[in-house]
Image (cartoon, rainbow, N blue to C red; front, side):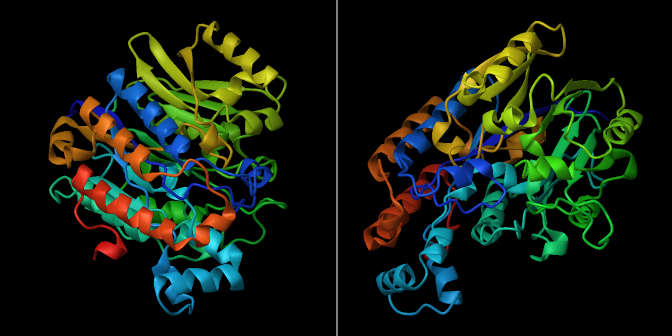
Amino acid sequence: MVKHAVEANFDGLVGPTHNYAGLSWGNVASKSNVRAESNPKEAALQGLAKMKRLADRGYVQGVLPPHERPHIPTLRKLGFEGTDSQILESVAKASPSILAAVSSASTMWTANAATVSPSADTRDHRVHFTPANLSAKFHRSIEHVVTGRSLKSIFADEGYFAHHPALPSVGQFGDEGAANHTRLCGRYGEPGVELFVYGQIAFNEQAPAPKKFPARQTLEASQAIARLHGLKDQNVVFGQQNPEAIDAGVFHNDVIAVGNGNTLFYHEMAFLEEEQVLAGIRSRLTGTELEAVRVTSAEVPIEDAVASYLFNSQLLNTQDGMLLAVPGECREVTSVSRYLDELVNSGGPITSVEVFDVKQSMRNGGGPACLRLRVVLSDDELQAMHRGVLLTDALYERLTTWVKAHYRDRLSQEDLADPMLLQEVRKALDELTGILGLGSIYDFQL
């Protein structure tokens, strides 16, 4: 029986140590702003403003908490000893790069938090979650433990929700979460098609692979998640990302394609076997026809797509078609701005475009779509989840006040060694778990 369902967006709240360390090789924006001074307060308020705009329009909008950073438990595992202050002093002298890594606020990009399969697609008719191991980057590989705790706290009812541990943290099972996963369907409550996009086949050295930048998602990881989630063959398509796109700076599929409902909006360089991917979706999609909105290199060169993050936009249902929520940079790149005007007037499924200011996130290589994890929930599942993380006017006001009280308005790489920063972060997060009603999820709380 088809149930009514909605697609909820859970945005990552930008953490107090938001900074520009340039940690992500293959992410052009991240590297180009390395060592610039950041504004954590502005970044968090920008993210909250984006959430509020969507909540005000009637979308179900949730909040996922940032993680404790700098992460002292990781530094202790690496052999640094003493008090927290002594450890920070030691690592700052011995290896500033390690300090930057364990201080990253990268959990703000919750498109990488997990892969989520709705109950309409799974054999046991529960919503399944697998936190991403993010093994390609050290600074992100330490995220999945607390991410898993957060998700289990929010989606705790085992009658409705199933949680899996992250895949083994090795390159052969590199998993980057929903950034390489898109679901297409007629209605959210109907069985859909889950498109898993991978960068390489780990156990086949002869298979196509990028030459300049690493492929972060493997076919083997995608297949493992499909098995764990109990997905049937008719609900799954595996497609390879174009290696040339990865080498052009498209480190995740959501930088070159985005899907919603029956619509796939993508660049012609997105997939290695484009027609095969589209045919696979069409043959499995039931109750509707695939709307493939293809952008050519003549319309938007791949370099402009990467610079503007055109495809790292949110595609949302409205009463009059679909809304594309784009970063402000899309209006600063001539070819992209021109294309968006033509897109709205084309008579296709995307009927409106709105600009969102997420500049602090964009400087580290994350647009509106990076900031959210999509979770399709039936009415019963929505009631069964912990609703204290759903954005209301009252919660928005509390979180805005919280950010203004606890966040710095400028942060440099040198500030990461400040013991006071760690104390500020812990005090803020301890208060936040109370505001959101999540219980003890951080190492310092356990």
